[in-house]
Image 1 (cartoon, one colour):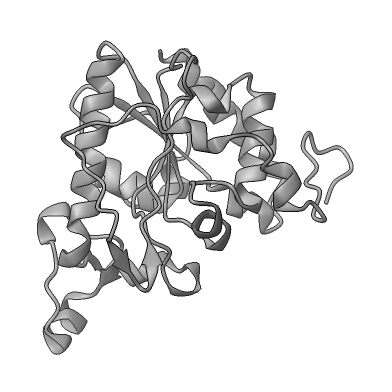
Image 2 (cartoon, helix red, strand yellow; image 1 turned 90 degrees about the vertical axis):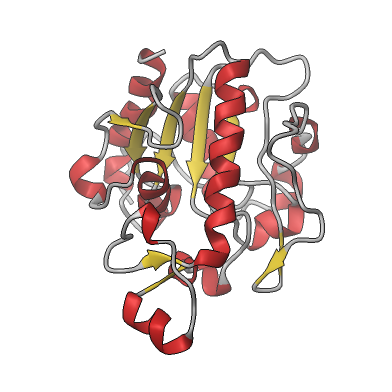
Length: 240
């Protein structure tokens, strides 16, 4: 890790001290047209719903969408509260963005086995062999398609974003944190070719999506790209 990096992750942090802030306060805005099924479960994982701007905090019209919750998210019941969440908080602070004023979501609200999002997708051949339905209407995710039993997750995201867009006066911008949300939000593949480039949102017409790295990409040793990463958040703010 370069000593000149703008952000330095404390690998020895403990979630209990880091999460002293009340993320539970961020469920202020609930939309009747995007209900949460409290009994829902996939892969043995509970449903981890979105975090909305905290009570008393004016929304900043910025939406951050990731892939799926990990172990810490399942344990604490909120998106982006593990190591990736710590790094995300740091980069948001560097960019002058208040996390508690954002809507924070994941495309899929369930933790997949091994934290591998590929479990939500399947090839056409494998689907035919195993008798699993696929949702071809959403287009391919690489060489695979979304499994039909998870399309409700994309529709939940669509309905929530639509309601939030209206609540924010028709003015929001979405940052897609990784290839999975970029695909869900825009139908596009090839994240590294589209990093930082504004794309139209297919779920909510008229909304711009800025694709960027997932925090885990930086954590895997790509520390030298942190300034570029922060620039994507700054650019997203400027589109508002």
